[in-house]
Structure formats: structure tokens, C-alpha cells
Amino acid sequence: MGNMKFKQRPREEQAEPDETEEAQCASDMFGVENEQLLGALVKPRVRVGNEWVSKGQNVDQVNWAIGICIFPKSLITSLHVFYILQEPWLKHFTREFFTGL
Image (cartoon, rainbow, N blue to C red):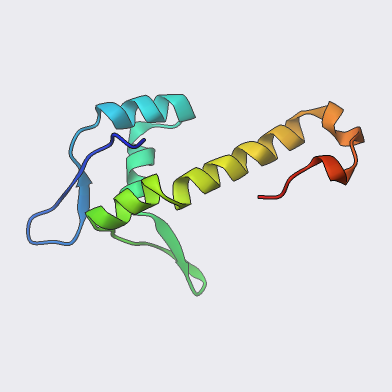
């Protein structure tokens, strides 16, 4: 994920993918399509009132979302919930064995 490159569109404050080889490898590992992964990074959907709108991001915002905070935390949270719900042997443990995210 950290090797993905993005460039700024000319005359706009919009990021676009520069090379797609790294994004293709990452999307294969996550099991999603390449366009979905790049679209979620470049134009994430945010909730405004009762509607969902696409928000354009610049290169700094996309790089920050990949590397520092948002994407790794959401991925770890999703995997944690997936394993808790998928493993029936985990249900007989008490709460003291689990960590919060």
C-alpha cells in the first residue's frame, strides 16, 4: 500500500493514480477490484446530512489516508470483527481475553 504513487491533476486539486501496479497487487490481496480501491482512496464517500457525496482529495490527503491513520485502522478493525464473528470457538471465552480497537 505504501508504494502506491499519486499525482496532482493539472489545474485542479484532485489526485489521480500515477502507477497502478502496486494498487493492483493490493487490491488482489484485499479481494476487491482495482477501480474500487483507487476510487475509495481518491474520491471517498462521506455523509453530509442525509446524503452520501463523493469528496475529492489532493495528493497529500490520499498519502495521509494510506500511510498513517485511516486505512490501516479500518482494515484492522474489519479483520478483527471478521475473526470474532467467524470463529465459533471464541464464543466461550470471557471478555478479559479480548482487546478493544
